[in-house]
Amino acid sequence: MIYSPRMPHVIHRRTLFKELAASPMLSSAQPKDTPPGSGFRIWDEHCHLGAVPGNTPEERIEVLIECADRLGIERLLVSQGYSSPLHPTADQIRQENDRVMRAVRRFPDRAYGSVYLSPAYPEFSVQEFNRCVRDGPMISIGELETDRRCNVPEMDPIIEQAASMNVPVLQHTWLKTDGNEPGESSPYDLVELARRHPSVQFVCVHTGGDWERGIRIIRSTKNICAEVAGSNPTTGFVEMAVRELGPERVIYGSDVGGRGFSSQLSKVLGARIPNSVKKLILGENLRRLLTPILQAKGYKI
Image 1 (cartoon, helix red, strand yellow):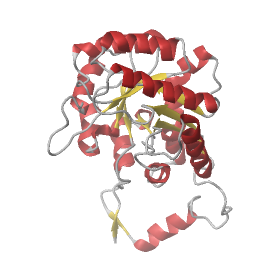
Image 2 (cartoon, one colour):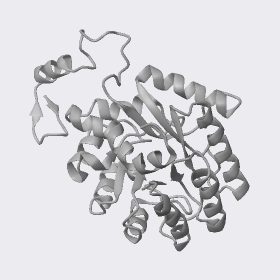
Image 3 (cartoon, one colour):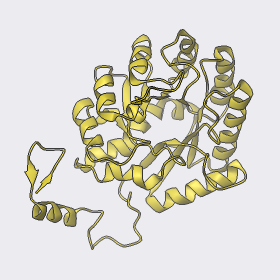
C-alpha cells in the first residue's frame, strides 16, 4: 500500500502503476525524443546565470536555453547575474544587472530580465529600476534576497516603482531551523510588506523552504503567489499549495543553476493534479502577472 498526499487514504500499488502507465509522461505511445514538458507552455520564473558554464553572460544563457529546449521550457526569467554575494555593494548590483541584460539581449524571444535591487540602497534602487525596467529590457523586480528584511520601510520606494509599471516582485524567503541569515526575509516579512502594498503582486520565492509552513503563512494574503522553486522535489508540495491557495496562486520556477530544471519541473509534472491546473502553474499564472509590462514593452506573449 502507498500513501497518497492528495487523499487521506492509501492506494494499492496496482492502481498506482495503472495510473502511471496511462500518464503522458510514461506512455509508450509518446515518442522517446518528446520533451517532458511537451503539451505545456512552460515559463520558468526563477533562473540565474551563476554555476552555469561559460565565460560570458551570452555563453551562459546559451547553455540554459539549450537545456531548456531539452525539457520543453519556452521562456526563462533571469535575475542576479552570476549570483551576487548576500550583501552586495551598489556597484556589484549594477554589474549583475548588466550581465542579465547582456544575456537576455542574446535571446530576446526566449529570456527576460528581472532587476536585482536592495533596500540597503533605496535611492540607488529607484535609479536602477528606471535604468533596467523603465528604460531597459527588464520586466520585473527580484529575486530580492538579503541585506534587509523585506518588511523594512526602505522597501517601500522599491515597491512603489513596481506599482508604477505594474510589475511583480519576486522576494526570496526562508524559514531555517537554525535561524535565517542577518537580513534574510521570511514569509512573515513578505506578508507584512504585501499588506502595505495590496495593489502589487508578489511571489514568495521558495515559499520559505519549509513549504508546509510557508503556504499557511501566505494563505490569507491574496496578492502573494507561492513559488515551488529551490527545494527538493518532495511529494505533496504542489498539491498542498493548490489546495490551500487555489491553482491561480502557484508558480513554477527552477532556481537554476543552483538547482536543475528537471528536478524542479518534476514537482509539477508529477503532481496529482489535473493537466488544466498544471498549465496554470507552469506558465499561465506567470504570463498573467507579466502581461501588463510585456504589452507595454511590445513583447510577444
